[in-house]
Amino acid sequence: MQVTENQPDAAIVYPVSDGEPVAETYDHLYAILVTLEVLRQHLDGQQATVLANQFLYYAQGLPKLRVAPDVMVIFGVEPGGRDSYKVWEEGEVPRVVFEMTSKGTQQEDQIFKRRLYAQIGVEEYWLFDPKGEWLESPLMGYRLVGDDYVLIADSCSQALGLQLQVEGTLIGFTSLATGERLLAPAELSHELVQEQQRAERLREQLRALGVDPVE
Image 1 (cartoon, rainbow, N blue to C red):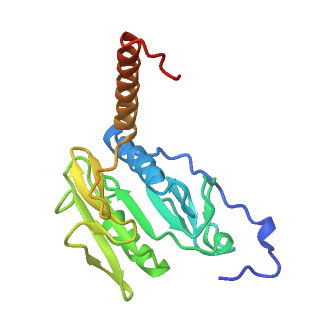
Image 2: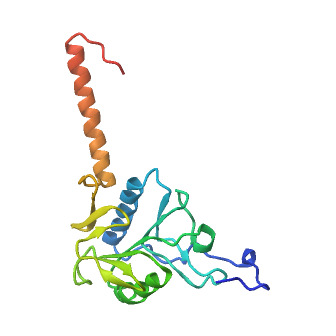
Image 3: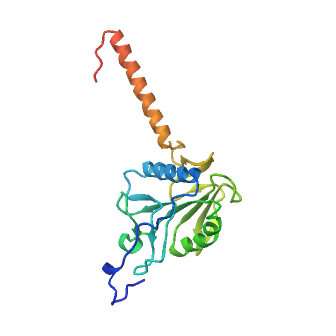
């Protein structure tokens, strides 16, 4: 959509915040943050970015036409954060979107956003209900076929190369290529501590044998 000549895009304000809370409950907020970080780690080194709760502007010159996906993954763009995401500047539509459904968002997530994301060409749309209250199943994925979404029966994200599963109040991710489960930030921190402890035990064993370990 083009900007009118009497209102150049430079003069149009695209807000980066609406002052609304990021999420309805702690469980929803935690699910957003963990999903964001796990996917960032998964896509590290690729031409892709993962954004959370930031405005997606999809019509140039019309700043009221916007949506704020809980988590969106965009391929073919520079990694890193943005204050907002403008499709016409980046040249790519988000390929995958996650919405953490709650009491206050259930209708919007299942009707309006589903229709909107299909219209702008989002390849996969995932709904997750951390509390298991508002969806037929806590995790529901859809893939764009033609101009509408069809249910993903096997919970596999072709776009991400991941198998998705419910793990309590979080989405779990497993690599389709390796079969390895992706670790959440808290789990990675625990793994790091354990690795440091193993390394220290090894150094102590070497010292006991009279070998000076290389630090």
